[in-house]
Length: 121
Image (cartoon, rainbow, N blue to C red):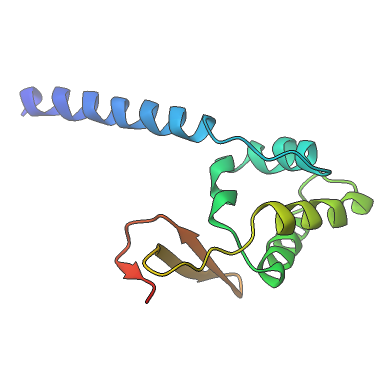
């Protein structure tokens, strides 16, 4: 039993360090709002999640959720954040892209690139 636990724990450590390196390799595009997004969103989330993209309505919902969670962004900067996200990370709808969808707190979410078995037509 111990012989099997060591390789599994080693595998887990390698997987976690690989995911951390992958997450850090995501570069935000330049634009007004980049620093706010980088410093606010990146403190709680892996920043590469933004790459999945949303519709403008979806980004407004995400921003509203973050305001409800009292993310420390000055009130006058939320519009800058929303505009940056909408411009920099539009919804991706190309056929064959894999998505993982879920609902929470009354909002629908969709993450691209996930292996959850849902493929667009």
